[in-house]
Image (cartoon, rainbow, N blue to C red; front, side, top):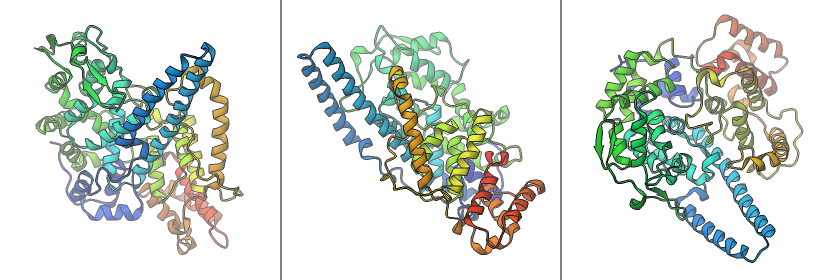
Amino acid sequence: MLPAAPDEWTIQEAAHLLRRAGFGGSPAEIASFHALGRYRAVDSLLSPAEPVDAFVLPEWAKRETAAAEMRERAVAQREMRRSMQDMTPERADRTRREFNQQQQRLYRQRGVEAQGWWLRRMLYTKAPLREKMVLFWHDHFASSIQKVRQPVLMMGQNELFRRHATGSFKDLTHGILKDPAMMLYLDTQTSKKGKPNENFAREVMELFTLGEGNYTEQDIKEAARAFTGYNLNRQNGTVFHNRRQWDGGDKTVFGRSGKFDGDDVIEVLFEQAAAASYVPRKLWEYFAAENPPEEGVAALARSFKAADFQVEPLLREIFRSQAFYSDKIVRNQIKSPIQFLVQMFKELELESPPHAYTVSAQQQLGQVLFTPPNVAGWDWGKAWINTNTLLTRYNVAGFITKGSQETPKPARNNGDDSMMTMDDAGMGMDMQMEQMDRRQMRVSNQLQRAQQNWDGPDYEKIAPRPLREDPEKLVDSLVQRFFQTPLGAKERGAFVEYAVSKKGAIFTNKEVGELCHLMMSTPHYQLD
């Protein structure tokens, strides 16, 4: 095991844990978390009181509704094909295109709703580690709505990750084999006896369980035969194993032979030595730092194997370890775009962030929920930051902190953000090009409306009037809120100088917003 830290801890260490194992918090939340002590705080993250189903799914994402809609869509398709028999080829083609376009519009709208639902859950949840792990699994078992197309299946996968968030990695891997979204993403449903598709066999070894170099091409070919026959019932979204399409012959995988099916192969994968170290290494990189020492990975691997691949004990060991709180790790991890957004909202104590803008901001910052770039997931760390994305972070922080303080407000648009800019899920390339200019115009108009309708944070709460009488106290209060640790004299002095220059007869909300924006527009704020 990793050497453990003592139960006593500082409020800076508590803030560090809450940022890394969640999405940060307000000063009051950090103080309450600190009062628990290190060990009880870790336990509170691993065993939250909030139930998994605490947030109601959108109606369309509920299992019964989704199954009914799938049946209705199948009926509509049959009726359409029947009616097309009496049409001219031109009219039939137009009817087919209109049907598909209507379906695509619905999927795009629901994809945006799914993004907003998950981001709000991250913000409001009382089980932050659970949601942080759902994001980890979404990146680890990456699949994208751009290929899957059906938002309801992506939401189902999201719920699968939530149920297994800190549970058995082995059980989750068995579950992902038969997850409808993953089956569509890696073409498992097309894999049949005599024509095995190697996509899932390759990725389950290289990206999901073992890592590159820990298998052979022959292992992939033999495993692919075992992964045949898994079918998705498009009438109700369930998965079944079609024995007639399954290759029931003998296979040899990692030296083990038998009439394996997919579940059998996954069991064989977890017998390999690399399975014990692969996920612990990734979890350390996700929560702590890149390039972990090999002796640390080896210690975590032994613990992981001993716990039969249960994730909770592994996370407890990480979060209680001395190494996790070392100077090399604290404030040395670049925030992912989602972390940047949600943490900023929590630090500003926003009750209702502008949904339209947050969806657009994901695209601008380079991390869109339900849309990882490929099966390997996102590139993390330094890949999040370049000249453009850093400037975008400053601009996003400026909009959130300052809102529309000086902008006249037009009539509101009844909250219709539904078509806000998710990358058009699954749309064909030709159609994407045809609609790009129209979409960009719509995005521009909706962003303008969002900007005009956003009032900004409640600065009377964040910076009460008496606090504003002393610029140094105001700066120290905001530094603690946004950085949770004292800054160097140079950095603090710059903020104090700015605050003093802005203080007139009263320190207005506009000026507090500008000071908050200045703090968030620093390289230091981009680090956790």
